Length: 92
Image (tube, rainbow, N blue to C red; front, side, top):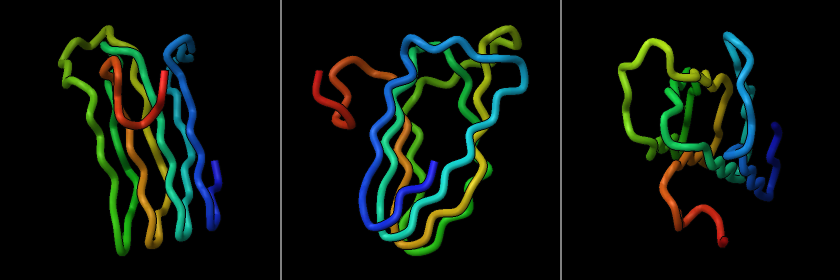
C-alpha cells in the first residue's frame, strides 16, 4: 500500500491470512488505517519519521493465531491498526 498526500482505509476482518503473510505499507504525508479481526498477531517492522505506527489489537501469544507482519516506511504520516468493534479508524 502506498498513501501519498492522502489516506487509505482497509478492512481485513473477513480476510484469511496465508502462512508468513506480509503487508507492505508506505505513507508520505498521509495515513493508512487497517482494521483486523480480533485474534490476529500483528508485528510491525515499519520505520517511521515524524509520526508513527499505532497497533491497537489485543496481544496474543497463541502460536497458532494468524500472524500479519507489516513492513514499510512512514514519513510524516502514520499507520494505525485496530481490532475493536466501533474502532475510530472506520465508521461501520
